[in-house]
Amino acid sequence: MSALSLVRSELLRQHNFIDQQWRAGADERWLAVQDPATGMPFARVPDSTAADAAAAVEAAHAAFPAWRAFTGRERAQFLKRWHALILDNREDLARLISREQGKPLAEARGEVVYSASYVEWFAEEAPRLYGDVIPAPAPGRRMMMVREPVGVVAAITPWNFPAAMITRKIAPALAAGCTVVAKPAEDTPLTSLALVRLAQEAGFPAGVLNMVTAARERAAEVVDVWLADGRVRKLTFTGSTPVGKHLARESAATLKRVSMELGGNAPFIVFEDADLDAAVAGLMAAKFRNGGQTCVCPNRVFVHRAVHEDFVARLAEKVAALKVGPASRADSEIGPMINARAVDKIARHVEDALAHGARVVVGGERLPALGPNYYAPTLLTGVTAAMCCSREETFGPLVPISRFDDEAEVLAAANDTPFGLAAYFYSRDMARAWRVAGLLETGLVGINEGALAAEVAPFGGIKESGYGREGSRQGLEDYTQMKYLCQGSL
Ligand code: NAD
Image 1 (cartoon, rainbow, N blue to C red):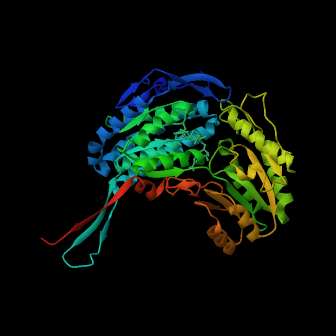
Image 2: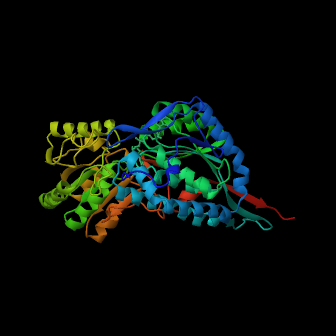
Image 3: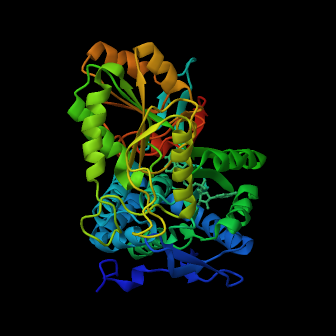
């Protein structure tokens, strides 16, 4: 048995899931799913049409009244069963993630547990969707605010965390009493469909959760149906900023609620008083998880002049030791990039940096002997703000290092970007820690810490990294609307 074949073959789903049925797309066109390690197709899913998208909304709309009528505790029971099934099938889900997305199996197993943690968290939060009792300004009146589910939610996800991106949206939507139509990324539909299969086994009623797949060229055809339909009351999107802006504009036609988890350009600052070993460990964890393909990856690394040489030397040793290879090899730490476009972008960023005076300390090349989509973990020094790798999200295993001289200068540089998702810094000075954390223009800040995301915490950005939060109490409230009730005296 190959390292990436499934124990339960029925988890490989290759159809849409609409109104509790597994269906081909309306015109029976198919989208090939490729293994990024080889570039070869190994499965296919529907390349759906507007008709499939419309059928999914019909089902979700029809299911909404009964689903919202359950108590929070009752909805939590469905979610708890789903959570248990995800963990029971952890190995198969991990293999699907690795096969279609490329991350090493150990990381994929970690992603399954992480994705399940959102289902458990929102199952626990579902019965605690409190409102407010409001002290009335005049006698004889009772005032309160209650929270209600917004209705049908459309969820659109990216490829980099095919399990976690789905559960971070679907679990809170279902917990709040909403029903869902979802479209996973075209590169990684299989993990999402397997999660839906497990939701089906968990017994969610027909129409509560629907999933439709489509090729990139057809994504707009499917999603446009959801954008135009006034019965879809919320759009939750994770992906790139240009697509997010387009979807936000289109959502205005029916004034949908919108949550946007978009691109980042995270700064990682190493002050002169940092614990350098801790900073190296934090950077390695934050940067190289998922081969550098995460939205919170440090994209610009600023190191104080006084510790620059020392830090670069320690980091170079670790980066050079990273093992690159397919997910099927047990010792792989960095897998293939998702596709050829992703590798081309990294190569372009490195070439641009070198042409403008940066220096390669480690890596700096494609690795064609491994397969079409591999790029070597790379460390560059002498990077400036004008280079492409400082302006755009590289989304790959590239660490570009710049030097700085003082705090004000590095804060200005860190904030000099339209993005505002994550930032990290290392310093032993407590006064500086609170000052710098307060001045960084991002939704998340890691203070002497490289791993930020957790189901209990509000994850999300500011500026052009978006709005809305996933995880935490706020991640549930984003799927509700407030209703104010005022009772006069009888
Ligand atoms: P993408 O924007 O290209 O695609 C995301 C999703 O949108 C996919 O499902 C895709 O099919 C769909 N899509 C694309 N064009 C569309 C259109 N015109 N209409 C409707 N849907 C459309 O992003 P990606 O390349 O899949 O993911 C990488 C990006 O996601 C990066 O920028 C990364 O930073 C971001 N990301 C953000 C977070 C976060 O939480 N902030 C998390 C993960 C990834």
